[in-house]
Image 1 (cartoon, rainbow, N blue to C red):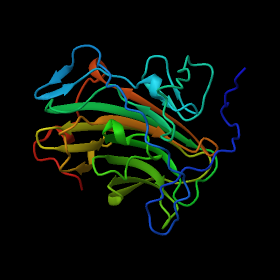
Image 2: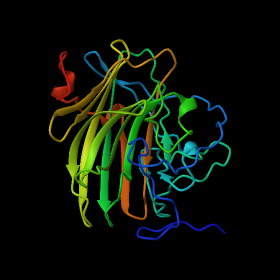
Image 3: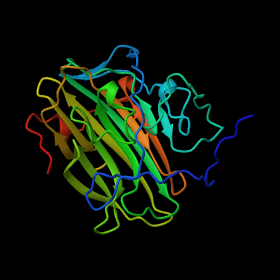
Image 4: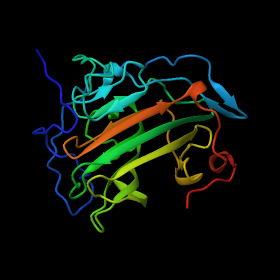
Length: 273
């Protein structure tokens, strides 16, 4: 009989942290090259807002790391198993080994402008230390997903995540490419009981080779990644971390669940601050 972690339960797992900052030593082990992954097919017809398409896709429950949970409808990822939401079962053949999350079922390559949203809720139970992570949202090639606990270090990947920023101890939104921190902005305190609920809008433009991330709550573009390489398809990935210290729930909104595209990201000349 297998057992699952309950909310608030302790685990002997190693804290997950961002190790690219030069002041910290990487002690997180690498893993062998994962087996090739099969591209998944999206769902129904996309919803269209002008020249922006909102395809219907989910998180691939079979890709989920065995310590994480994807809901039965493929919409929600949790950093703790709950046993009560009909979550994913472990797939030993296809499940992620190193990356603590799941892969989206949609390949982004030549569609033009693609938009989807991600609702994030996290609650801090114990303060994170050093540069420990809360969650990551990324775009990358399939072969890059499972080499590390994040995707930010890869040339063909882009990474947006929230982690403790060591200079002030706050939780910060950070935007990374190829081990380089491109920009950051504060998000919340790092104190027990802190809860954050936020919706992020993701606009990927395969023609202009951009990925813009907006704070939908405040109608504000946080960052725009430039010069993405779509010679091979890029896949959305979703990671969540440190279940001993925080609870994290990431919910994907696609297709008909999108009722509007924020004005800040629709504008032709949008730019990050």
